[in-house]
Each structure stands twice: as structure tokens, then as C-alpha cells.
Image (cartoon, rainbow, N blue to C red; front, side, top):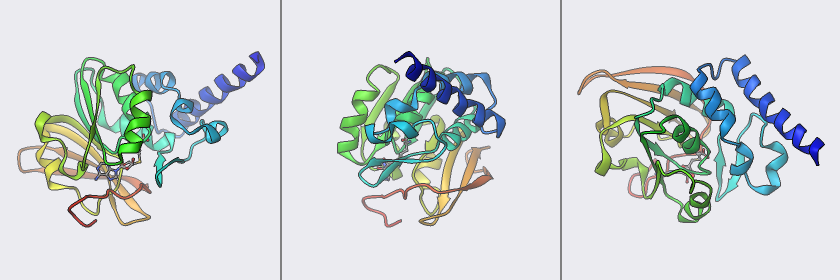
Length: 218
Ligand code: SAH
């Protein structure tokens, strides 16, 4: 049993070392959050052996938990502060939300998810975090009740940045979002320079599941 435990710890550290080596993560706060949040707790039992591999895994309902490298990169570019109020669109497995919650320890993460069955499973996994609130609904429209947000992270891909999300981002705030077609998108960092000005930087190519809006065809 001890040998097994040793292997698991080794695999987990190996995953983090890989992310550092390939420059996905570099700050101490992101590294320690990713060491704290164990990906194995967020993947279905049948994929436990793959929990520390750098690729997405199915979480049912035709959805996926993102690869650790993309989770690390998105967290890194947002430069999360401990007091940040963050909006996530696409809670999914809850893995990304847990990592954000470890850094924004005095802040709050509002995470919107459209699949009620997934919320039921994920709620249980995130119950130790009193700085995470899972909200059922259509994230295309954000969550205006708590706007504006310091940071917005979108983990499902629309064809263009939803207007409501730009509106709900603080001036000086950052949003990271995949934008594009069904199988290939650009991961974009959008910084709100002023009330009317957005600076967009393409970070890399990526593949996310589509952002499905109830009332808007994507
Ligand atoms: N951040 C997640 C990744 C989940 S995959 C993780 O760490 O596991 C993307 C999620 O976005 C899926 O769960 C999907 O149901 C959800 N989603 C897609 N369109 C949505 C929408 N319009 N509103 C809210 N959630 C949406």
C-alpha cells in the first residue's frame, strides 16, 4: 500500500514538474495551488490511473475536465489575487474552480454550469470551499448579480466573446477565454483597459467543448 502511495505522490509531482518545465506555470501561488488540489478527486473512478497525465478526460454528459497544462496556463495569466472576485463559466468537474479558490482565499468564485446532473456531482467535491458558489444557468449571460468581476475565466468555447461577459468585467480586469469553432479555438487573454477598450492577446491554440447557450445559437 505504501508503495502505491509513493507512486501516486511521484506521479502528482511529475505532473507539476512537467507544467513548470514547459512554462505553463511559474508563480509560486499557482504551483502550490496545483499541488494542493488533487486532480484524482475530480476525475471519474475509471480514469484514476490517468489523473496526472497532461490531457483532458471525460467527466460524462459529453463534457471534459481540461488538461492540467491548460488549467495551469489559464490560472497563471489571470494573475489571481487573494481578494479577487472571479466568475467562471463552465464549472464542469470543479477542478479549475478549486485551484482558483486556493489562491483567492479571501475572495469569491462564482461558477456557472448548465448541466444540473453535473452540478450535483461537483457540489459534493467542492463542499469544503466556502469561497465557491456554483450557479445553475446559462453562462453566456454571466452573472450580473455579483458583477463587476476582477477576473473572468471561460472554460467552454463561444464563437466570439459574449458581450455580457465584457460588460461584467471590471475596468483593469482580465478575462481568459477560448474563442473559435467546434474543434479548434484561440485561447485569448482579454484585458479591459477602459470602459470601452479591450486589449486582446492570443496565447495559443486550444480545443474546448462548445459554450452552449440556451437562447443563442453558437
Ligand atoms: N472548468 C471545467 C471544465 C469543464 S468543460 C473543469 O475544470 O473541469 C466545460 C463545461 O462548460 C461543461 O461542464 C459544460 O456543461 C459547461 N457549459 C457549456 N456551455 C455552458 C453555458 N452556456 N453555461 C454554463 N456552462 C456551460
